[in-house]
Length: 345
Picture 1 (cartoon, one colour):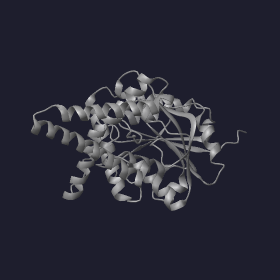
Picture 2 (cartoon, rainbow, N blue to C red; picture 1 turned 180 degrees about the vertical axis):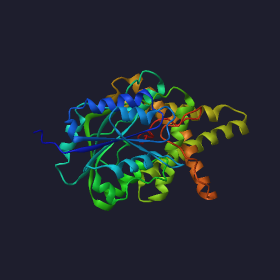
Picture 3 (cartoon, one colour; picture 1 turned 135 degrees about the horizontal axis):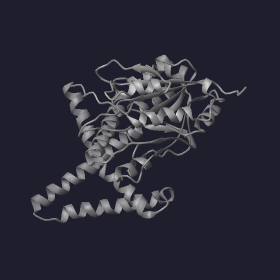
């Protein structure tokens, strides 16, 4: 008998279409005994027949009944139904690497480990510059980690001990959860160098990218406000504010002085910082042009990210609740995909 522990896989989604079929098929084809895998699909009011398709693929379907169908709420719903001690979360737009499950469960032989995750790659990084940026956003250095993304394997009891995901968070729910796990249980999060899933963000429009970065800014501001000792997020908020403030100051100076010099100096500074960032990233991205292209994203993203921080501050001051945002919104202002990994300066 294959001596591996039983696991529950929870996939969440909304109107994923063929992506969901590929997701569930990848689970079926994984190098893991089928009778040791429970598959749960949590749907957030899809209109494309996703629940029925998931049932045909052999998943147990849970329909999320809420007017704020966040990713956190979806994962909590799957967690509540999970029968096994190890729970692998996936998004409906991801495909599981065949060998991942065996490599992940082996790490849980260490009782101090609460979470294991691996490499996420984009299915089509060549399809757009936004896909390319997302492909490299997923990178995390293997080893002990402070946080994971939405796709990871957890001990079920640890998640229940800390109360699961916060369903009120529309972004940043993974960082919030991981902070509570390490703070309240002392358990460890482990990142492996092995590929875990491929992701299909399918981001083809600038508006999608802009809204995705706004969500990141909202998360930075909300999580840093919630946990003042989480210095990394507070530093990110300050850096974004500094970059935005410098741009505003340069534009105002150019207008008042009727000269392009202040704006030109600002642009030159950004170019120099981008080149420096690219030089640091070159070993990982293999070529300097690729590193330069990705480094540009770190500066372009700061402005919508700062806007997200400002939106959070205004909502907090006025007491207004943020619009319900799913992890797979549709339409021209769609905020598709999981929030990107923490971005550098």
